[in-house]
Length: 535
Image (tube, one colour):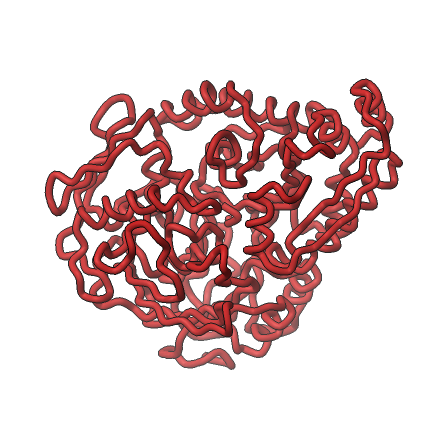
């Protein structure tokens, strides 16, 4: 997802030592006051994307964090680890040896927040609705392999898949498979606005300014029946346009916890703070950043142009000069720490080499300098994105092989819409894993219906390698096929990986449950947070 987060077998051990609470309530509210979570991002409604909290449209990390608190899915990821467990379901599992038929039995007595009963028919409605609406920039591609959904009874759901998919249980744990009320949500159109009707651990009240969400208030749902234990009565998620304002709010005690969106200087400032009630923890992460190419655009349609860029981009310089070592160079779409990762781009191109890039362009009879625009979202990926693209521009143009201009786009939804329509030759994107599996760093980017609407196609990846990996219940056994796919992408360069981010969580020291704040897909688990006492 654009989202959209961490692939670790256990996150608790990384966070617990530094972020455990210990003893008075200094400046961060009483034990009964809401826990305030700061988010430096925008969730907005636009003409092209009018329903930012509808599971059929929402497909970014911030919107998904809202949906996870208010909707149920049949499955969910556990506190730590990567194996999905039942949530709205009482039990789920494949009922054949080919991983093509998946059956679930719902918990009894499930209800939506409006009091309506939640049945198997609502599950079928939700999946069929997602696929019927087929929103261009939405998460529908995650469930494209469903052939049909059957409901033998009010509590039984059967998914028939078009092909084997061992990752299907994990996909049912994403908000793409959120269960909506069939009596409220329209079958063939989006549910516009800011309201939600779900059966999750919280009910939701929102505040917005014009077309932007400013606050999401989560109140513990007394009717919730699922596998989660909710540790608090209320959480407020506040959205900041400026990460500096968000960091200042944490220092003042107006915010209890924050994570994504801080600049390197803000992270270092919080780490060096003399405030004994402020804790900051860094950890490995699997958020990635990359350049996407419209492979039909004349400026970058030649593979040689894209390969030459891969030969001169200096990732280490970006990490050092722009991001202050708060990330690591990335040489594949599949990041380090994920089963199946290899450094395919480094193996093929090595360290930056202008002479090699010149030869690549000369051999393809490409006239230099190659002129095009690199486009990026000004705010969605943090305050330093502009500096990153200015650095990339300087790297490319200093070779005299490229004449690159850069352009920042203010509105995220406008940026996404234009990118999917092929408006940009090359543009910057980020990705948070929908599921903690190498599949999710390759399959969503490839083939018909890919989430970027990229025209790039590769028959071997689409029709051989990805299907082969999905037959492997043991994900380690899928590693060789994933490695082949990464080597093909390194040769064709439809995407140019740049870096993977580290995760930082900052919190007041009277907040407990921080060790479970993020799961293996880096989803924010607000139900794990509680207010204790500070030291």
